Length: 528
Image: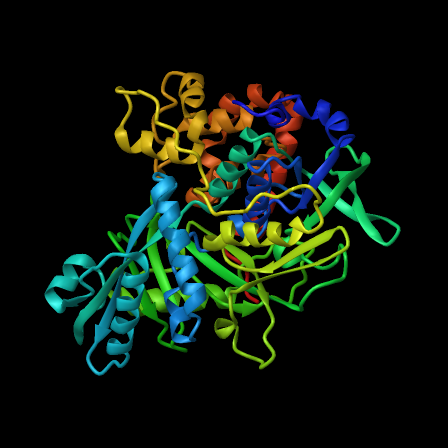
């Protein structure tokens, strides 16, 4: 691993934290989701001394709880948001080129039934989509051909279907890959370190007071510019900016054998006509999403409600009636809160825009809104605003590929699809990960696409502070396996406890806390 501050992510590395935080930084980024990670990388690769802090864990909030889609925003065309769609398509294509194995093409299939409307407008939108992406696809399939693409859909009244291509990712791993790239450019990133208050001198922000969640120590950290990239949590630190409308999107994970899909299937919900999708993800099937005002407060992690489970299951039962899916088929659930800027017209949640805005005051820049796909564009916009507050820094801020090209290591003994996956997630660290693997650890964990070696590497080199960091974000085993992976905890412990340096009592405490939080946040809810 290269990078001046990479040791902070390794066992015992936080001992160096006081010395790191005593430096004066050009940019202090608050928020460890995809927007903050993007700002950190774009700042560091352009020569700025940049530090990112996150009060929970990297990708703890929206950026590990999204719908996992890197998409062009096809539905935004209907609302006339051509610029946002074009920007999203451009960013999607860039990520597909530079992050294979992490960002992958995802085919979609949308069944059309007799009497349904909207086929022509949908196909017209896809034609524009193709122009933006610089490619052309066949989008309409007759019923028999469509059933080859999506064999499990309801057949009664099927007229045919529309197919198109977007992309999918592991959102938390995307954040980790961007952060690792930033570290390679000389940045520092610290989790479990929250910003409590801004430091001000002469009416200007000069840094922030940070509090460590691990040992309670407070630090006064100086920076020329503070960039608030806390997403849906933006505002409390400085009280500025537009009004946000936190919207909750909830999801289900089902076993792939119960809902087998070669393509994503998109449908309009039978109750309200909203779009719902199901697609293959990480060896399972992901179903989403709801779009509701989140009124439970932002001080705890979002969770699905019983009504949302019923809503998503109703969509599945309508589209795949012969599969007879029930709650017993649900492996896990998750919910995230989107940082949406509130409109002025009282729009329904699904009709709110997904644009981002950037604003500033002396020594402070803040970001609100935006979406996973456009994180690079958001980061560059934030730095363009910050540039006026960084005298002597004259980078033109031209867009470039997020990840520097790194050839995959030679591993003829390894399955090609697994090597592609590991290289996409870990980039230049892939060879070291393979070298660290013990016998049998390059096998996939049953029911997932995850290799055991990914656990060892995460525990050794990816700033794991708690067991949920390891099982919900460094890997996604807590979502992909029943009961959060309880059946595999003994082997996980054998691999990771020595790497983490946790004693028996520490591990027992972490396991109990993980099981409790998993039940609350990712299990099936009780009646509302």
